Length: 121
Image (cartoon, rainbow, N blue to C red; front, side, top):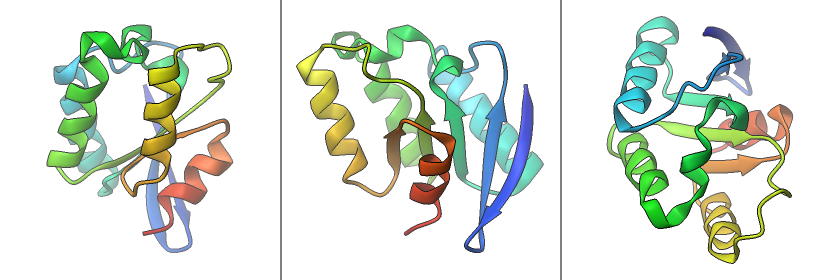
């Protein structure tokens, strides 16, 4: 895993780069948060969808809720970018829509949009 530090509109963002799945469960999400905070001194994370386990996108197992609640509880904001057109689940589409209307969790199609969302409060 490599962390790229980005500053946009005066906001520091950690862009996580990896060819491997980084977020597999709540513990790996916590580990990522603490590593990012220590290495970059920010609580804003942009990460590719490919770095998140596919189980996250099956809402019925509760993994997405557990992981995202940890981000919120610890004061982090996350933008997960990638292609979401492959999913047909209406609950997932609704979840993504509702998340994107908040201030802490974003699902975008590109890194640029992820950075834009994280740079606005």
